[in-house]
Image (cartoon, rainbow, N blue to C red; front, side, top):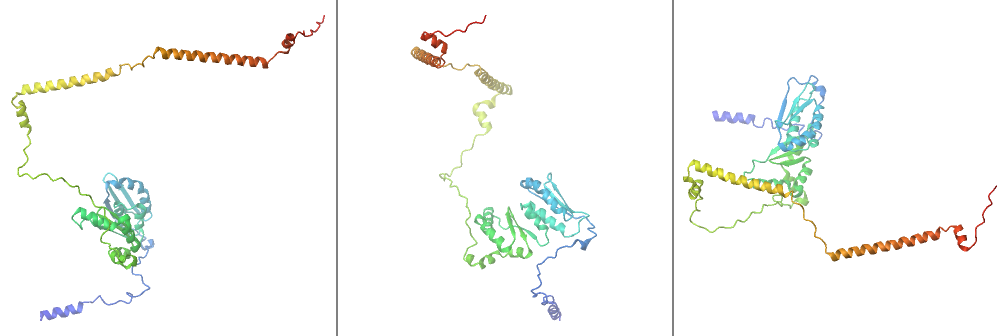
Length: 349
């Protein structure tokens, strides 16, 4: 009787909510559409302060410091305050009295999460729109072997990021592979399609025969190690510090002799150092080498050359003076030279 009662109860409740609705197949209704929030829906604002914070890696500190005014201005339009703490390496967003949209704080949380995952600030700010959604997919724990994980991550990116670009075109989403996570931004429909990318790629006739499981991945060259000859005996033990002292005989010296020996070695090192410093100081006072004196024959040739040059200069100067004299001839001297005396004016009495 009990089993029959359970069967009848299950029959009554099975498929109770799976009945077709009239709006399920209505083509005029877009089930993925998100209505834009109107501030008049919540004129009173928020009753409690909500805040979220997230850490960011150290290599993102410089970029976030430069892009923070842009992020702060975008959040201010929605009445959300933000803080960048460089000491703790964290970002915090919180609601204010001017906040009207209760879901905007979740959007602001997604914004700082995307910024921490190396998404550029202009792209991450788009998440504040009602139609834009995001998802950060963790892929680091899928494979234990690190080399295999790097290869599979490279399969996702593809040569020259070709596979990643194909994913973005087909899904209409922004995808960024960074470290152990994949950040995706787009509509709900696009984010759902990212999980079914392979089937979408196979629909393209040009890519139907393409093998998307393997790509040209740069493999690390394994260095071949030289094989040493096999010996059944273990390597000889290395001498310890005490063994070295025993060999040199220092182990049996008294403490006073050890100290005196150390002091003597220290004095020798100090003397060598002072001698080297003195040699460096004296090197600055050594005069440079003078050039070697020339032979007497070479000196005579030089004097002869100078005398010949002076003689030629004198002759040139003499010719130049004669030429100037011929050009500037005094007429009175020319007449006197020809034998005619120039007429003299009578002096007035």
